[in-house]
Amino acid sequence: MKRIKQLKIILILCAIAMFSNAAAANWLKSEKIKKIKGYVITASELDKVLVLNDKNEIVRKIEANNTYDAWKLKNGNILYACHRGVRLITPADEIIWNYKSKSEIFACQPLGKNKMLVGECSKGRLIEISSTGEILKEIPLTYKKGGHGCFRGARKIKNGHYLVSHHADKTVREYNKNGDVVKEIVRPFNVYAAQRLSNGSTMISDVYCLSIYDKKGKMVWEFDAREYSELGVNHLTGFQVLPNDEIIICNWLGHSPYKKGIPVFKINMNKEILWKYTNAQQTYSCTNIQVLYE
Image 1 (cartoon, helix red, strand yellow):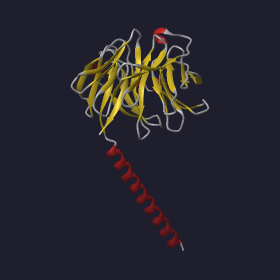
Image 2 (image 1 turned 180 degrees about the horizontal axis):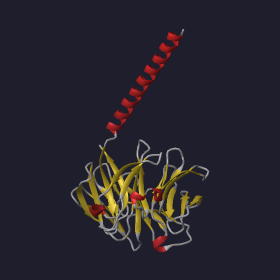
Image 3 (image 1 turned 180 degrees about the vertical axis):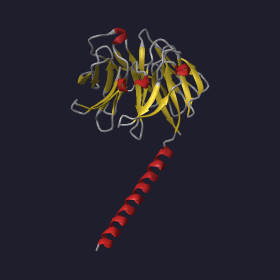
Image 4 (image 1 turned 45 degrees about the horizontal axis):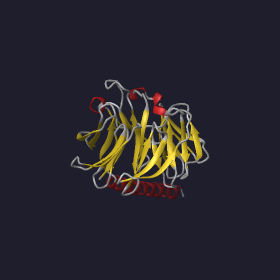
């Protein structure tokens, strides 16, 4: 009887090992499909949008005054904010769309093939604009403190609403398609970016923390970068949630390009630091990042 029990235990352990190996194989297969081939980084202090390869080498530089947001599109074009404007540029550096504004612009977003979202900070509004320059929609924003500190990140999300990070108000507001505020999340620090996650929660970056709030507005997770002295945290800015639930985050190092710190790093949901981009002299202060996949 004792031998039978031992045999059962061995069989169970073998089954667990087989399952674990299969799971690992599936994970590796998924990772191979989603292999990172590079990054698009907005380097505000360099006045450049930088394209890096998977070895963290700069392979392209685009002149972009005080840039804070950029997207590489499937056709290779890059949409980016450049202080008081937004441009769309080809791989050959040809400017094919150029929106100029009297307002500071910290956020832009491609909306399909021929439409973009532009966040005009100083004017306190979002606009949806066509590739021909026609303003298709205007969303006046609600805020207490306007001007330079009005907002940073702005994104249109799947339900047609807009998530806006009101920097000086320390508040992320969700606006419906009519411009009405339908939700507010208040943080203790100046907020920078917000993203709606697939489960309906909202992830927010502020000066020191990356946090998650559930649908009811309750904080359910928080990463406090002050607990990791090696990061040299100054202000957490743009971030991207990766397919494996890891998160890549920018740490804006301030207006002095020689300030020490880690400009970009990656964590998991267990708050473990998985990867650090350490060459602050190459990128200076990073404000946003887009991970590029093969």
